[in-house]
Length: 349
Image 1: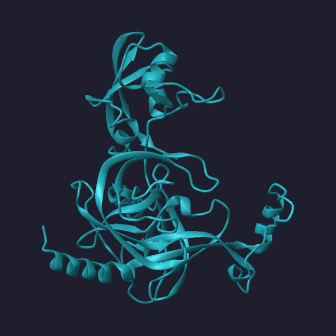
Image 2: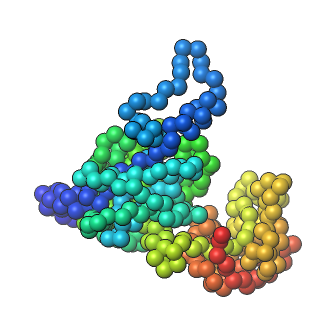
Image 3: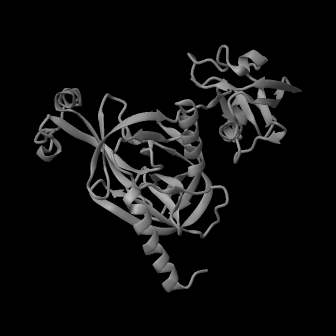
């Protein structure tokens, strides 16, 4: 444990080191398009009306519709942030550095599974960037710093805390987006507010260990960050292949819990049952690795390469640690009979 004075000195040094690489992201769309969408909203109650703040509209009639935080991950100008910050509609993305320099940014990749996106800016001079650390060996009680632009109003904000939990899972929803399960999260009591999303979570020495992602509404000191290892893999794929590559298994499934056991009258207490979510879905996707291997609706997946599926380590976790082209073995229970399937993971499109 560092003496208090030395620890505070280290924190100040870390803030000065990391802050120049933390950016504010602004999403802009044409005012006319936004006004048309406003007209489609439910009719407001009497005495209220929808208004567009004048200071949010620029000289080209582009209006700010959202934003968040991010950080420059290398000297090439790649910026890591959250996918949920970026509008699904055609939009412009602008990045402001801590020194008020302003750049137009391009979306170069969105992770199809994790809440991660990568932007890129072009600069004529060298850009400040962070050091990406290791999120595999984190410990409870470890001190961390969360950087970002709190509430979209207070730029260059930093908060201090500790790692309060590891391998957390939450279901989150950004404004108007579908629900998404986020797994393997770092829980911290460092304050992460709206607008902080996408900013870096660092250790005491300024190495990025996570990407600020979510907070629990109505609770105090419960915030979450995505482990940096997923973003590292995304960056490596982007540099090597020009896109993010993720392996495809090709099934829809439900993790076995008490409710699922009752619904399907199962005696097994762990695993995942292959089943469609809706009547118009398919439990096994056509021409996928699972379909080619012969996996059927109703099969129960018990183990992946000999490792048992549990509520703490399920199919998404195994896929996260697998590679496109890798051959895996699944232990399956079909009509109470154990079977093994070998299949080769293909690339998710």
